[in-house]
Amino acid sequence: MKNLLIRRMTDADIEAVALLERECFSTPWSEKSLRESLAREEYTFLVAMCDGVVAGYAGMVRTLDEADITDVAVFGEYRRLGAGKMLMEGMKAQAKSQGVAVIYLEVRKSNTPAIELYRRCGFEENGLRRNFYEKPTEDALLFAAQIV
Image 1 (cartoon, rainbow, N blue to C red):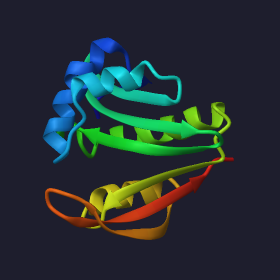
Image 2 (image 1 turned 90 degrees about the vertical axis):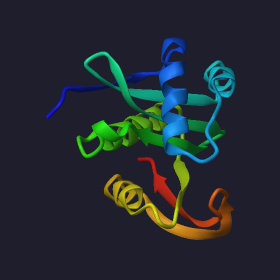
Image 3 (image 1 turned 90 degrees about the horizontal axis):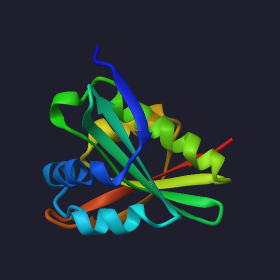
């Protein structure tokens, strides 16, 4: 088991996170978008660190007492080590400290590992958005978790 640490993302992490975005998503966030969002109060970003290297990250945007997970991603060599679960639990803790009552997210219908992770972290499926994703076009499953 590798030593993983979850912490708030900083400007120094943006290059690695942008690389992770390009590796994991068909429509990745740019370094500019990440930097601009990181500077905004309503956004929260966490990184999973392994021996000083960014292993993964998660983002969330808050509106009043609700929040949406924007992305969760882990580099291939760090998957199945608990980074995703630690990031999601970190997001839930951040949400609670910010007065969030419920967190929402969407996930590609075919992304079974992510769906299983979200269920393990207390998220429940509550809807479907047809043709939500592009490159390739795919439905999104909607999930929500109450923050207590």
